Amino acid sequence: MSQAFHNIGVASQRSGLSTHVIRVWERRYGAIEPTRTSTHQRLYSDEQIERLTMLNELTGAGYRIGNVAALSAEELRKLWQAHQVTPVQNGSERENANAGALPKRRTGTKKPMAAAKQILDRCLSSVQQFDAPALEQQFEAASVQLGFQGTLQLVIAPLAQQIGVLWREGTLTSAHEHFATSVVRLFLAHAARGFATSEISPVLIVATPTGQLHELGALLVGASATNLGWRVIYLGASLAAAEIAGAALQNSARAVALSLVYPEDDPALEQELLLLRHYLPPESAIIIGGRALEAFQKTVDKVTSLQAHSLSDLNLILDGLRKPIQK
Image (tube, rainbow, N blue to C red; front, top):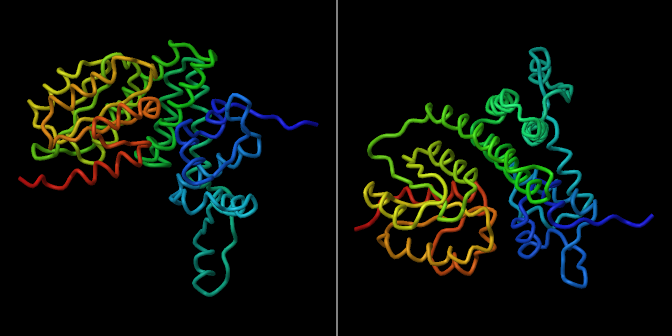
């Protein structure tokens, strides 16, 4: 039987990684070596997609991609399997352990990545059925099991990626995407009430530039920044550079965060980004992320921006920007 191969969109959907991350891991870390067609299109086998899935889960559990990308298939699987279950001790087992006896290992409590995958599958099903209560329930379950950042990084961000892939393939419609965005917005707004900020908290302006109509990524950026103690001013989707800069200047924003998702071939975007950089003072940072970041890489490089390829990257950038500006 001949081996089945799949394009990068399928590999992205099944592994939970964005197409950009797959390309970066391939080019920078040698994590995978896809087959190439005569037109240089990447093709991935089932085994390679499984490898990408395990790498995704391990990096989500805290491993550095540079440390696990070179592992053999057998080494990677052993490490991945070790993170699928957590040993649970009851009172008597703890006493036995203190006495020198080994506790029995149970498999009832799953590690975060395994729990997140189950919740993610249920979330996608809820989106497909337009079931808002069910989707909200899964987000709440994720918050309890994974914490807020875990919910953002392991559930909602991968969900947004999958919806985008399925939308481009025609499996989901724009209505599904708008439905998911509305439910996510309500959930994040409710969750943000528990995060304390003050007048001295650094200000972050969050938006998408003119022509970028998908705002789910921007919502995630705002929620993650709020969780880290930033005072977020969320402007929404498709806003002109002058308007974004005006809000930043009026509020003495430390940074502006932009999400680029779709379309990936907007000829007007370069001018908008260059205008934004021109309008803002040098000390105001511009953070750019999103699924379409790679498509606009040359333009993004011209803007002297900070690039976030994931929410983890974003959080590291925000932590670095918390240092006081030297005047």
